[in-house]
Length: 314
Image (tube, helix red, strand yellow):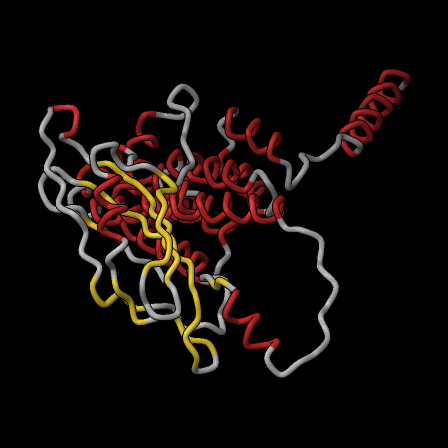
């Protein structure tokens, strides 16, 4: 009788102890990793699905793909990796922490979708640049330059060579614009007292002002005759591409009023470019139907296989 009573008590305490055992936390990445390590892949997937989007979203997709692959759901694992690469094309997996099979699938996915991703990113970066959003365009072009040198794009290097050249040029241009903007902010004098209003004052102000790409009400100048000097490399050290940026100020009559090299291309070429720029002719920039002075930055690329190539950006 006593032994039966003791057994009942022990059973009751065990049941109560089991009832108070804490459940596995849902929506916790550390818990999901532990579940994966223990081989409980289904429970790990459930846990990962409960995690809200945050800074760990890339790692969540990585472990989701690991669990799916372990369960033999390869197609779903590939789709998870596609989401990961699309959201963060620069994401890298640690070969020491991830199975070789997943690493191979990850690189296959990147090789397949990166060409489309870099073209989309270029379109977004260029749109930001053309809208004068240089702070947004700069990191986008930096990512492009990094991606276009990625090993997973090696097979597409030839078809993407022009995109790489343009991205390099736009990045230099964005850096030059941001540097010029910073210098202008430092050099801006305090506002002068407003002169007495006269009929000629607005016209005089417009004549003295130099507009640029940030002035959306101004129609940019159009090149009429702007030949780039030929580039003929003569030494082995010159047998590769050189990138530079030229600044020109175009007067209201369409002639180049001032030219300067912002980013040197090559010491043997830059003086030729400055001399040629003095004779360039443009259809002048227009504001309210009247020609105005305009400043623009022109990235250029020197290639040993052809004449110098300029990228004229309005």
